[in-house]
Length: 315
Image (cartoon, rainbow, N blue to C red; front, top):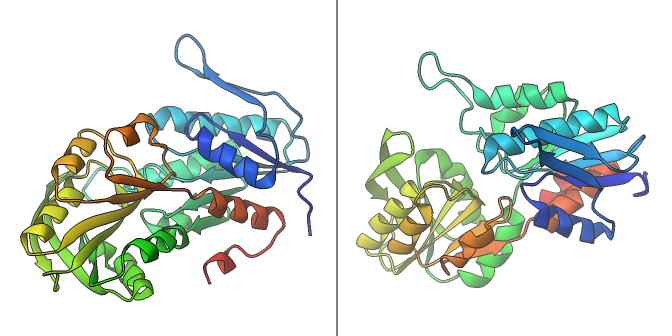
C-alpha cells in the first residue's frame, strides 16, 4: 500500500475552491503552479515545484469558459509529463462536451471522443470524473476512467429535506434510470415528463406520466444548462396539481438566462453540487442549495493513489 508522501494535487483556474477543499482533506498544500495567459491569450503554465516521480492529480472542470479551461488542463498535463511525473490523473468534476457523444445528424462530430483523444495525447494516465452525461464516454478512452456518482452526497440531503408524499420526476425518457434509482433509495414513486425538443437547448413539455397530484415533486437530472427543460417541467408539474416542486441536478452549468428562468418558475428549490463553481451566481437566487463533492473526490483520489477499490464507495 502506497503512502501519501508522493501525492501531489494541482489545479487549473476553473474550480480552485473545490481543489482547496480536497487539499484540506489531505492536510496538504495545493501544488504550486502558475497558470495564466500571454498578452495574445495563449495559455501559459509553469510548474513551480518538483513533481519527478510523483502521483499527480490535476483538478479542472470544463466549465465556462470551456475552451480556455480545457486548454489549461491539456497544457498542465503536458507540463507534468515533461517534468517526469510518475502518473498523471486528469480529475474532471464536470466533463465538458459530454452531450456530443454520438452522431445525431449527418456530418456532425463526436466531440466527446475528440476530448478523450486530446487528454490521452497530452499524457494523462487516467481520468477521474463525476456523473458523465453519457456513461459510454468511458469507452472513448484507452486509459482507465473512474466515473464517480454524486448520489451519496445528494441522497443524504434529500432524505433529510424530502420525505412525505414524495414523487421523483425524470425530465425526459433518457433520465428514467437515474430517477428510478433515486426513487428506490428514497422510497418514492416515479413520474416521467414526455417532451418534444424543437431545437438545441429548447424543449416543450408535452405530458406528465404518473401520479403527481397533491404530492411533493422532485425533478432529478444530471445537469441544468439553460434551464429550459427544467423550468418547463416544473411549471407543468405545478399546473397538474403537485403540492410543491423542487429539483436536483449534479452539474450547475446555468448558462444564458438560466437564473432568470429559475427565479420565475414554480421551483421552490434547486439542489446542485460544486462540480462547477457558482461564484456570484449563487447570490442572485436563494432557490439554489449547493452541496460539496469535495470529500467524495478526495476519498476517490486517496483510493486511486493507494490502489484500493473505488467502486466500493458506492456499495
